[in-house]
Image (cartoon, rainbow, N blue to C red; front, top):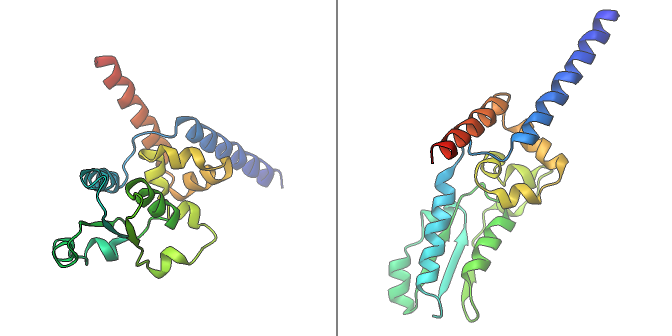
Length: 179
């Protein structure tokens, strides 16, 4: 019985230390889907190019990203059409936030959403937001999460996360020291 108490206590201490240190080190530039961030920057740039013009914005996940011919639609409709297809794993609120930054008065937004974007799951806020993306580059999303949601994101990112966070912080400190 004493062995079980020691084992359980050790496990709790290790878990507490792991999650505490991870929370202290996050956010940090760990490996994640940086292409999603780059894609949103490109799409914002395209939307800014047509700023002040009436336009059609088609936004959703990869179903739009890979299946909408905006050149053809622009010619047929005689207005700029922007393909704001992002990533199928993104939450609906993230897609809507991105589109809201691009849309202006008199613009039309079409949302051909996929089922998994609409159907709410218990962990939809965390899993569909990409826990690793939030830790790596989507700091606004990371800051919007409660401590419990951050702990959930850390637990979803695997046991090697602590080492990734530590290495990312060390790399960032070395780079800033060299500058």
